[in-house]
Amino acid sequence: MASSLLAKKPITLRLCGPRGFCAGVDRAIQIVVLALKEYGAPVYVRHEIVHNRYVVEGLEAKGAIFVEELDEIPAEHRKQPVVFSAHGVPKSVPADATSRNLFYLDATCPLVSKVHKQAMRHQKLGRHVVLIGHAGHPEVIGTMGQLPEGAVSLVETVEDADIYVPPDPDNLGFVTQTTLSVDDTAGVIKRLHERFPNLTAPAADSICYATTNRQEAVKQAAPGCDHFIIVGAPNSSNSKRLVEVALRAGAKKSVLVQRASEIDWDDFGDISTVGLSAGASAPEVIVNEIIEAFRELYDAAVELADTVEETENFLVNRELRHVPLTAQDMAFVNGD
Ligand code: SF4
Image 1: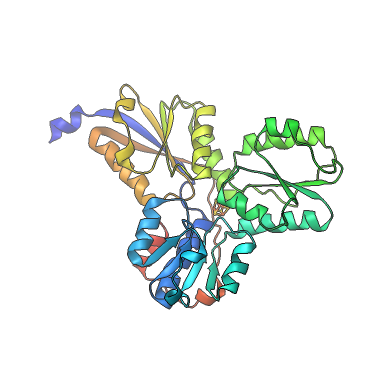
Image 2: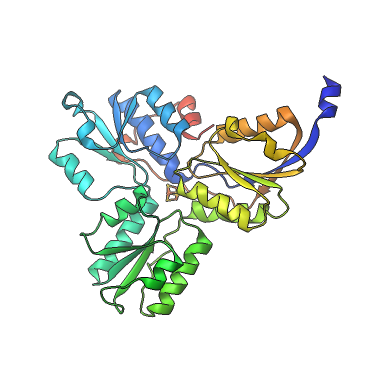
């Protein structure tokens, strides 16, 4: 035993903090767990509540049923609640739920709702809205759907900003998706400002605290890393951005994995320092699974690379605030 331990190659795991679940994800998962306790199974959830299979499968095991559209909810279950995901929904979705006599609980992150309000404020003040974000992402679909068709233009890149033709160049306001790259977005905004000097910014940054903090922690930890593992799903915007940030900040390689079983160990031959972080929808239990996988193969030392402490906490919907959570529920909600 002792000799096999000695034979293991030493490796340092540089563990970023903050990482993993943000307050919006935590709240969304709580809403589904509390709804299951209050109303019993099934509880329907429109779209993945957060972009993570582990979380989705855990909620399915408790009695949640995930659907993409409201018409998938069978008539005999219309009295059961349907939860809208943390990414937010177009205004047409709650309107559709009401017309179908469905009882819905909105788990849209309050910071996404804030962006919706900022977009609506631009429009109220007569501005055409430029949304900086990724086409097809549910949050972008939700934000565009707060305003009438044609009131919002989507700009994804600096190249898009170069060729964008607005309806009135002097009457523009922008908002952004909450989970973008802080640096890339600054470049797009700069280009838009150069072309449209009267472009109005939102009252507060649209990129959320969790995205900003996770990117900053990875940026600080990446120099000197031979490899950087980000725990997250391929459809998780903020997780994908962390891979890009790690590479730009100096990590020689970076990869997105959903579970330890996805790690390609051939990539870890002659290396000594590996960065590790997790996107805002990735539970801590998988970070621990990856640390354990390293410990089985290496003499792994964990080095904490903490930047700021996060204290954000968002209240769940009023209808659910009286429902108690057990310690076991809390562990699930916290991703432990
Ligand atoms: S990443 Fe930001 S906007 Fe998205 S759920 Fe978390 S806190 Fe809210």
